[in-house]
Length: 91
Image 1 (cartoon, rainbow, N blue to C red):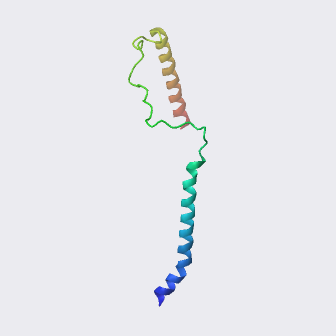
Image 2 (image 1 turned 120 degrees about the vertical axis):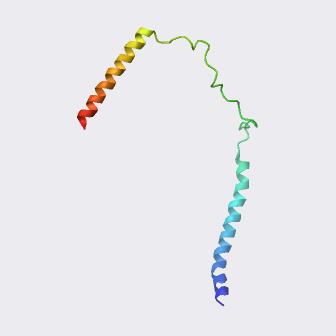
Image 3 (image 1 turned 180 degrees about the horizontal axis):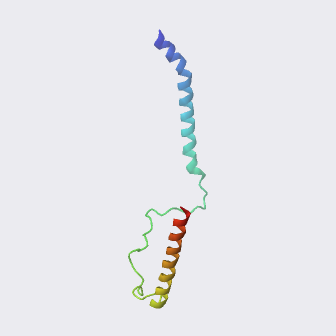
């Protein structure tokens, strides 16, 4: 008797879930028809990737002259040293 009571209690809930699932399923088939007529079709095959392993032809030449590079490296080293000292003073 208890099993029959549980079935009668859950039957309306199951019915409502079934109706909701059918309603949502029916709406989804119409979404494809909502595409505008002038929309561009997507290509079937994806495009090719850019060649990331190919280097430019003049990659071997130095972009920055050695004198300027040494100056920049010295400035960066000095800034690093100043930050290290400031970090120790903050502790």
